[in-house]
Length: 105
Image (cartoon, rainbow, N blue to C red; front, side, top):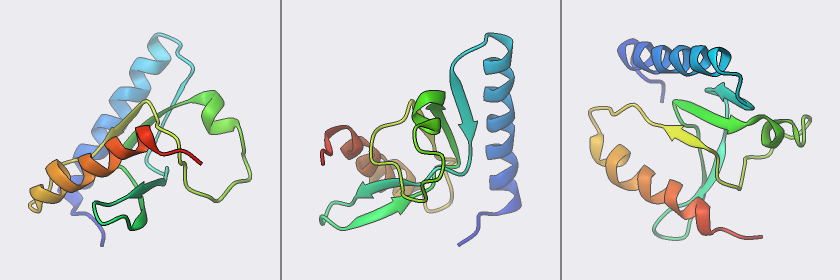
């Protein structure tokens, strides 16, 4: 389901601010809202999460430019703008993102 315009406004503001900082102090990072992360929920179900804002190492982003698959390794930062369903954002999503650090294939 799509986010509200207010939600998108906050996420866009963060995306632009992170991009400004990366350009100001040239860092090997990419900021986007298009990354899909493969996560596993508390029941073991695999799913994809799209953070509102993601910061990822440029080399990690460029490693496979033709890939459609979700990222399975941790990224530098995943930002979720809190919604009215805050339990999802504070509990479920955080739990899934933390599991990315221990997933191995």
